[in-house]
Length: 181
View (spheres, rainbow, N blue to C red):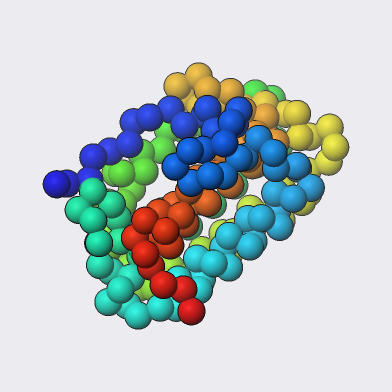
């Protein structure tokens, strides 16, 4: 079976615990977002240090390999940072659409080098975390929206981003039984 593009609207994870990964993003306070991004990135870096053959293998036909998920997480950090900075600079911006499945194909996630992905993921996570650390108390309520109309504050954008990367980590370390040294 081929990987079917995910077309679900995942914004509900801002209201309740995700039954698939167990993460409740609605409980994450703003002062923990940056630290949790960095901690999550650290686990991805440990995964990317594993055996390249394990990283490239798809254990299930309907899921990406750990390397492909790592590339996606790196890109999530980039995309969320772009959105965060739009929200900081502009009043109620609309973000460009991002097709994550298309990005995986066009950017050849499966063929990327783990060392390069690790370095890029680390930089992207640290940039995003630093930018969240720079948000002042009033800034957390600034708004932005996706092209489909879903509205976020800076706070909920951070919570949403965290769910995404935590959820994929669970898919790799739990569902796919990827060992982490």
